[in-house]
Image (cartoon, rainbow, N blue to C red; front, side, top):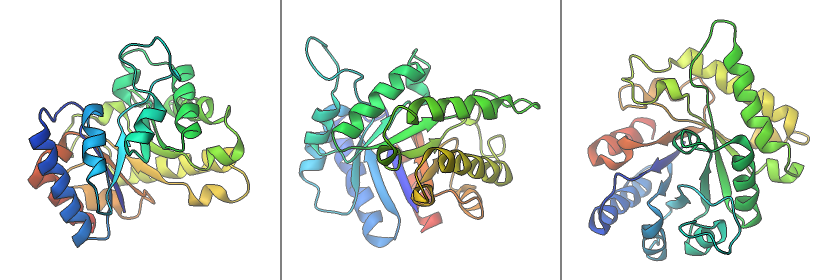
Length: 247
């Protein structure tokens, strides 16, 4: 099982970041769960440089640019040199700020060019009875992957995060049967877009109101490979419970 802890902007100090990173290291050492943490950009190099554990690091985002007069942008190559192995691309919170499919595709290409493994976030805003949300997700996936070379597509991890499920209680979020259907749908899309049988090795994650009370049900029988966890990843007891529940 694979868990990505997206700290977002919840972590406000280096001291807090160090404590959370140490917790992740202990959990990784005690379980077979593969853990990746995505700290705020200024903390990435500090934490990654001192890492001697099995945990990995991800950039929360990368720039759509490659350099130059771009004040405030964090380039893919900077994140890679700072110690990131992964990069979260197209998160719903970035898309909500106006990030288009075209920008997502550019970021994806830049991340791959710098040797980062992209975690491509896709997901609908709402579900409709006619199944229009499936077309919406298909377009998100296709617009991001089609410009890439076939071998590059094989390196992308998909993270399904339905916007309507974010911030809900587990009772109001997605149920295992619906998640299983969506994971199957995403795997069919990957089979269409990836060469040969390489889609069989692709990973599909889920993010959206994952709690210790429902993570085992969501993990079992849905063919999901792991989870993208937000706010719960900076609450030590909750995050520990999540990891132990799927260990």
